[in-house]
Length: 167
Picture 1 (cartoon, rainbow, N blue to C red):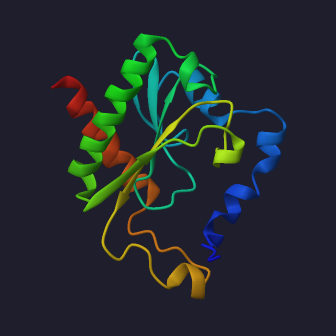
Picture 2: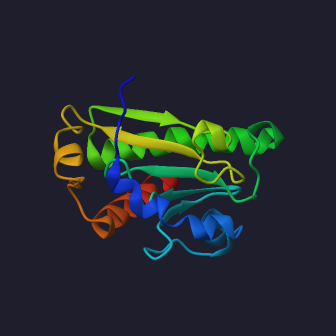
């Protein structure tokens, strides 16, 4: 069996105290009325928000989540489900506009055993991908190279979502 090591995720794993206390960063984001760089929310919709991943696999890794603290996809109303998928589609479109990736991973980890870091608050992932974005640096140098600052990306995503939302 081969193992894929991602040591840059150790900061996230180290934040498990917050998760064990039952604190939900997505609920904190949902409770704040405005998108800000501090909460990394880039867009808000009727029942859904888009948040930049603070511990990204790649620059531009977004989380799309309902405001409601709900861990089950099947428990969402039809309207919530439809909006979640519409916002996911918009997030992919905005990511393509802002970062021009060659591909994009889209998915959800439903439940702890499926890898959900926040198993009780449903969220979808979009991860932009480029040829060569996985290289020797993380495994040899224990370093993940991010090509842009989080603040720069937050500004670009925020502006792109505002333009897309008014079109």
